[in-house]
Image (cartoon, rainbow, N blue to C red):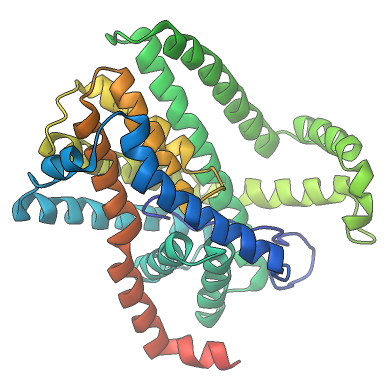
Length: 364
């Protein structure tokens, strides 16, 4: 997770296929990867420092005035909601990896979220840390790769499904929004709903999976040499679909409940952040902004979408009638908890794991 994007992150070029018990592997990091990650972090800093007040026609004096309304009791309540969201996500991991305990899942989730939010190339490094922690607890490599596939799919689908809900609230609810926002909601909601339906059908239908396989075979023709020898696209998709279906059949309901609980708790955090800084928009508008924020977290330009999510959601809040200073403060306060205050949890979890099987696993 990130708390910004809670859950185990899926890194680039992860090998999760295979009929044998092979390690999930990551490709080597190149200088270009380091440079792009550094550029992303710089962009995030510039967007928050300069873009937030510029695009929303406010000032840092106004933003700080709103943030100064936060009291210790409210700050503690927001921290409890954040921790509860982390705990809720453990059901997603437990459902994807039979035998994993909730405490182990909480440790893996917190460490992965901390790395993904703060470290250059954090998504891939967080994934590597998760694999290492799972291996140190004795899980088979094939079980780990199946878990990573399913949790990655669940996170992506959740971030597609949430904006669909937000679009329905915007289109059918009591919201007075500009026409351009409503038209965009129709388009985004339709595309998102189609993607969710196709993904579900791929997991449960051989026929749909075969159709997707045919399409991918055409699309991958220019790069077919990158597919491992003796392993065609048809075989890969068929194998992955069977493994996904098996995990979803046994743990799908538990994973869904954990994901829903996480987003409800984190929306509670978002709602408290909005109210404490004086943003008095109705609940429907806040639901739209929150779901839109979750979609923006998949933008890979910056770590966890940091900067882009704050400017984007604050801008939507203003379009829906919010005060620019309060909207900016809401976005920033939520980001402080989602991206920064998860770090103490992650460091504590890392220290606990290191004191147990961690040191020996790293040496091995």
